[in-house]
Image (cartoon, rainbow, N blue to C red; front, side):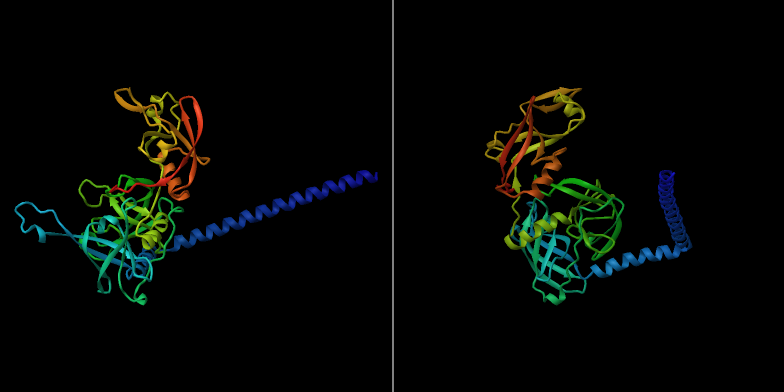
Length: 391
């Protein structure tokens, strides 16, 4: 009898605990629902004018805070005149771009293509200050350059830097620059795409993780900052995709996380030295996979060519050796397939580029997971400094 009583007491205790948990859960849900309803009512209570006014406040604050930091860059270059244009030794071309203050030591960051082959560089600030600048470092592969001006540090206002790795499509994006010479113009839009890949101006190498925005970017905006809603730099505007030469809603910006990696070396050494694998390659997908007699869902990087004397060739990696025609299209076949690097999967060639830039330096040894025919191999490769364009 006593044992039964203890069992009933134990059961009642367990049921009581369960009831208490359920009551707490229901109370929490009701409270959360009331909070969300109140917030919704508050939002609904805002008039259209108040909503627009709040947006205007955000945008004008970004502009006012950034204005002292953004610069208008004017460049004089020696031109290539026609025979009728004489004299040749005095023929000059004018260029224009944008930039922004990087630090209180007078460093200005812009695009490499804005100041390449420059004879004279003039920097104008929004307060009317006009000074001569010198190029102290440039990297055509990332299309970045650093200038230096001689101005007291208390008159220099570096822009705060954000991060690009945490960006999401749909976030506010603001571009400030000098389109078509119209000084200190602001345009706004959103981050409309992430993870794009582009060539850096005259460089054959790829810039990864590029930001796409629909904020209008035009000639003259090159080198200017792309800002988030707090006014932090998330990218440097560098290119547009357009058939007319003017904005068509597809602007491209170098991600600030890459800029933060490269600019310090440009300041200290005048250049940035990338690790180099020494291959040209292409992402494997779809019909290319089928041409290689692989399942269509296969992913990786097919080595098209190994550069003579480069790390990949020295390690014994193989480029493609032939062409296979499938449905009237020629596909390269016969090369090694890179499926991973140091244990990290390589689903496309951009994965390989990003890993090399972010995780390695020249002289490092990396382990590549390679598919060669029916074999799966681990190949050690010692990275070299990347060959420069002019080599």
